[in-house]
View 1 (tube, helix red, strand yellow):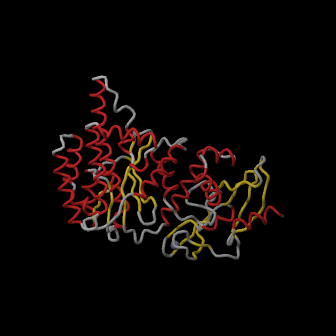
View 2: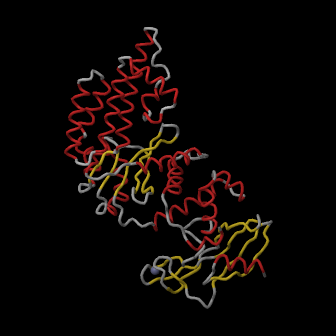
View 3: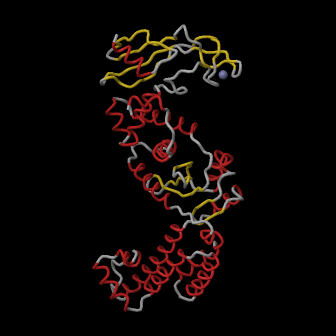
Amino acid sequence: MLVESIVRKTLGLKRHCVERVRDEKGKLAVYLSLDKRCKLICSGCHERASGYDRLSVRRWKHVPLWGIPVELVYAPRRVECRECGVKVEEILWAHGKSPLSIFLSVVLATWAKLVAWQVVGRVFGFHWNTVRKAVRDLVEYGLKHRDLTGVACIGIDEISRRKGHVYHTQVYDLTTPRLLWSGEDRKSETLEKFFKELGKRIRDTVDAVCCDMWAPYIEVIKKRFPNALLVFDKFHIVRHLMEAVDTVRKEEARKLKDKGIELLKDTKYIWLKNPWNLTDNQRVRFSELEKVNLKTHRAYLLKEAFRKFWDYISPAWAHKYLCHRFWWATHSRLEPMRDFVWMIREHQEEILNYFHMRITNATVEGLNNKAKVISHRAYGYRTAETFKLALYHGLGNLPEPQLAHRFL
Ligand SMILES: [Zn+2]
């Protein structure tokens, strides 16, 4: 019968055959059995093994055929393996205890990368939770089969879930680039957890770690990756500098406003943007503001001067430059700028490490933006577990079982 041969071909059956296909209340139930001519394979070591007993019948949801739900029905055998003991036989369409065939998981999870999980469910006629299981199956497979050899640079950053109320620590492989690990919170314990799960496998190959000046992370990185160069991320440093300039502006604007002067109103981005990105209007406004002796302008000049810092080739010259700016800022009578340079001084060694190895979290920024898109598609990412699944799925660059791609 045609349906049977379609099922046989698409499943790529080797040791099993389609016994019959039955219409069960509008659902196609495909009954499978063991091909008597074939030897059983152990799911533990993938070697031949002799039969032990038979388990009760299991059902797997499978890829719908022209909109008709399909289920695979089979009673798995157990084998007695010389290596692994009593194990379930290897079943090509199954993934662990998942109630979905691996083919269905691939189809649903592939779509789930493109559109909201809710939509995938609606299109294929499954509950949202089934889509979640599909993604989980694929992520589990991917994490188990991914290659972690040669991870040389990692970047650590955080993203927020639920509008900034919950943080997730993200560890990225900066070379590939891909998400290596994600965990709820941003404490030192969070990073310890990462180390416990992955650290031993990558400890010897990682030679640089890039992150923000975040004390709980620093402590763990220094302890767990003692041989890696710790580099503080340029973009985070720039962001701190921007925040300092903006604090100066806000304070000054408030004081001026008290005197009835609205000089600094709506000027935030004039001070923060790169000068060459200003619009014509902003440029005109800026040339007016420049003439007034403003604290914000002085802070702005320090910010602009700092741009040169990153162009240095030699760490020694970069250091000299920092000392000079330090003096300047501490005498500027601008408190936020003073705080900024003090922070730089405290972390000077790791900031100057940038001139030994020019790594930044620039790629992380791109991945974090993608992560935000993922979290905006946030139907039901209420739990950290589901959010993590979505992140690994979207950013992990995980390997997928190849055999299932004939359905895509
Ligand atoms: Zn075995």
